[in-house]
Length: 288
Image (cartoon, rainbow, N blue to C red):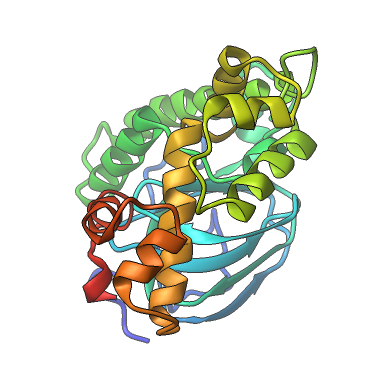
C-alpha cells in the first residue's frame, strides 16, 4: 500500500514499527525520545509484539470499524475522529481493521518519560480498556505532528515539553479510571461493561440516566460523573454513538429500509438518524 504522505521515512531508532510501509515516523529530538507517528491502514489484521514505548493512537478523518485488543480486553466498535486508545508499554497488541483508516499518535519510552515527570512508573493500562476523548490531548497531537513536519532549532525543546504535558494528561485520565473502581460512586470495568451491555441490548428504548444508573446501583448524578471519567463521553453521547454504530451495521448488511432501521435503533425517525450519523460518523446513512 502506498502512503498518501510523500515524506514517508524509514522507522526511527526510537520507535521500531512492525509496519514501516504503513506508518510514517518522525522524531523531534530532546531527552524524552518521543516519536510522532501517522498510520494509514487498509482493511486487515495487524498483530504487534510488545514494545518498550507507550503508544497513543487517535483516529483521524472518516470513521471506521475496528477490533482492538491492547492487553485489556477486546474492543469492537466504530472509531470516529478524535477517539483515542493507548497501547501500554510491554503489552502485545492485536488490531483488525474493517475499513480504510487513518490515525496519528505518539510513542514515548516508558522509563524516560517516567523520569521526566518524576514518577516511578506510568501506569496507563486503564487507557487500553475503552475509547476515550480529550480536546487538550487531541490538540497537542495535531500540533506535535505539525511541529515534526516542519522542525526548527526549538523543536526538541517543544517535543520535551509536549511529551511531559501529554504524559501528565494521560496519567490523570488513567488515575481517574482507577479512582472510578473505588468507593460507592465507582464505575469500574465490570460496572462499565454492564452499562454498555444494557445500552446495546435496549438500543430501541428511551433509556434515561435513572435506568442506566440504577443498573449499577448509583445515583444519576454519581453515574454521569463516573461514566464521563471512565470514557470521556456523557452516557447520552455514548448511547447515541452505539445506536449509530448498530444502524450502520444494519445498513451495510441491507437488513431493512432506512426508516425501519431508524426505529429499530431508537431514533425518532429517519431524519433524526441522519442527524446523528452526521454528528458521530461525519457522513449520512445513504453514503455508507
